[in-house]
Image (cartoon, rainbow, N blue to C red; front, side):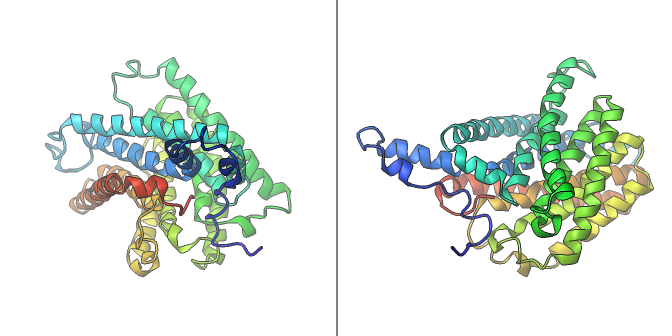
Length: 371
């Protein structure tokens, strides 16, 4: 059988299981619920990542150490209402819990579809998304939730989240390294960077909680494979050979990875040093390269899909890195750059949030995309 566009059919369950159930048991409403559960794949967690990253951005903007200043005595964002950050974080938590419940039900009632994701070269990368979402929620949590600076509850939560990430690392990186069934050259695509982002977000969270050695370990694991993945994608990615047109927003993951790497290394080193600046400038260059080629995304934005959320969280990571750079550079140009990137991130997030709310029926029921 000829395979259609990659990533579209592997999540479609066989309809025989539903059709064979008597109509007296499975009414239309139950069918609708079952259809929604069947369509909520791991790719939907990119919504949670986007809102979690936006909450982290707002938390950074309203802190007293915000770098977005024109002079040492004027903090532009100290007047922003902290209630906005709290509402964004609560929204992130509610949406994460909702999607998690639906995905757990998918694991129970459509396990074959989850197994198909696990064995798919795009779908398996999105299995990192739930854990990345949790780690971002943990980092952006309001101060009153963890009153102690290094709470034991934080450690326990972090460990429970990082273990699945390490397990997926062993699965994916181990296959690339030891088997001839899943060479990186055959499976590489932009979503492969999600595994790297998972390690870098975990490293950033570990350092913030005082676990320096664990943070360095995860950073080393992530950056080593980032170099391999980035070079592989740079050499052979044509733009259409592995990613269907509807999924091209995932190209913005090229922006997210070096930005997150800069933030993670800043946490380890304690300063936005030369390496951080190099990673930030790389991220800024990749963002400029993608933004200057809107034709690349022309087909992907014709019809609304959850893939649009891949635009949001890379911009939030870039804005966070730009704020750290502005704090170090302490100049007008760096500050203006941080303001512009932060504004773009917020505007894109608000647009996606409003448009997704208006198109919620299409988001949950339209039988397209999955990863």
